[in-house]
Image (cartoon, rainbow, N blue to C red; front, side):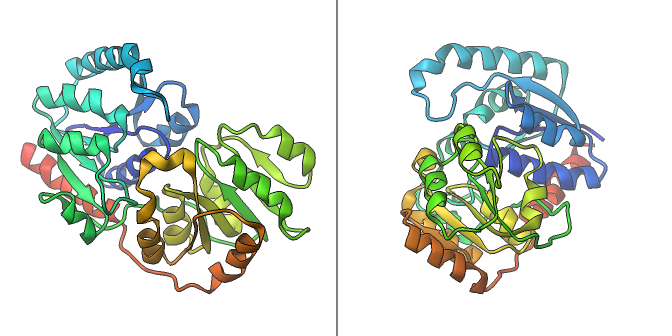
Length: 327
């Protein structure tokens, strides 16, 4: 059977790629996987699914477009080398600017391009996915409401990373806000009721001040295995927009609080937050105050847990039908 190319990206995009890859590998499909250079935790996370290649990330998070011009050329050149030696009947692009160069190069070699919209978008398309859609890529959607954004979209259901550990309660609150981190939220944790056990993942926010102030906390910047910490948490506090809320809520049945993150504002419209929170059965906080955070910690476990089939299974089945036709 032909190999499939997964373009993983970073952050939540790598989570979408991981989910699709997980279900494809279970079906016996061999994968080549693209990850951004320098994102070693993404490489480690996806390395068990197939052959991993590193390509330059054209535009870094929150960076002005003009600063990445040279990297765009480099990314296209590296993508040409990859696709010159490999013919992929199917390319799955998980979104972000990282997806664009290899998708376009493989599209010129007659690969069938599949992509996915972000789970948190209900009123406005994401830029990279919209570009690929206009070039003819097939776009998978998480929700029926997203059909108003993509007339030719394919509703697969919410795509979330499958559980790899048994869910348990070890009595701590996990605070994790992805690659960017959320300093204002982290500083607010100092003002919670004393005695709470905290596991804090800081992303690119310096972890050392929190380690010094709270030697009793577990604090780290990055991990390739956030599942381990989600699985043992009593409650998860994470960022909006982001995909950790899906993994925690739908894979591990954890109470979740989503907190708006200005550093993630390009990932999804701020006004779409309540729609996503309602679908997931989680608490959403648009601003951070000690009283509202304490109240949310008490209320989050009381919300009803929704049940959805993982859209990643549907997408993997869709790709299998393509591969059987190509064979």
